Length: 279
Image (cartoon, rainbow, N blue to C red; front, side, top):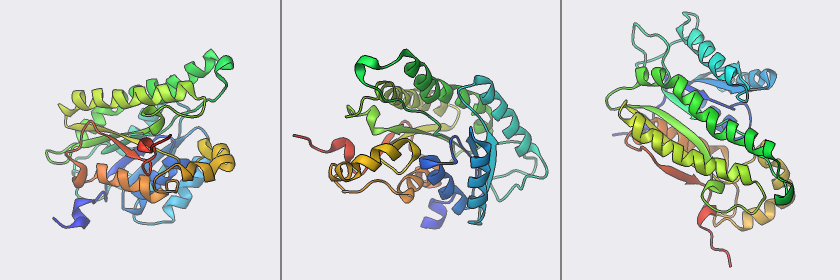
């Protein structure tokens, strides 16, 4: 029971939606650095390809870019078709013991990270915010998961189930201080959807867990951190914001043998933000 095998993800095939920037990029780097084959999606193909180039320079694993705009439902289906085509291709490297000799496309880990936020004063909060944020943060997570379930099921092994990791937020657990009404509601919904999937897909040897993330350096958090980083860090028991190692490490745990029996959990990765006492 050595740690090198307990936390091993080498050769696993991983899909990280929204994996070119922010938390998604941090997660993608963790997988590539530890020998996984990682497909990352983004609306901006140039940014996605740039991220893959930087990730591939790390060695060990491999990163591939696929453009996808999840606000368009047809892009979810196109992503599935493109992924399946590439994984079935003889030109795509297939590595290690995770892959059978008669391998066709499989997916060991699906990380549902792509999403959106929208802040506006309560009296001005638009209906369009609800449509966009709930579509991206909740509905599309279900659609993408549903599409890839056959490939996850194919990749599962008796003691090594396939994994779904949903990137939630502590704002889905606590009441946020910012006026991001649709975002916090969508993340609370995502946390519960993940539990429902854990029960339903656990029967098919697929686990579903959520990381409820606190503040990390990301495009979504950039403006807030520029103005309030010191205040935010002061309110976190560990007095710092998250690092790439924090969120990547949690994903590696959930994706490896060490996390094989974890199902239906919502794990806070927030330095204690969600439980910080406020007078």
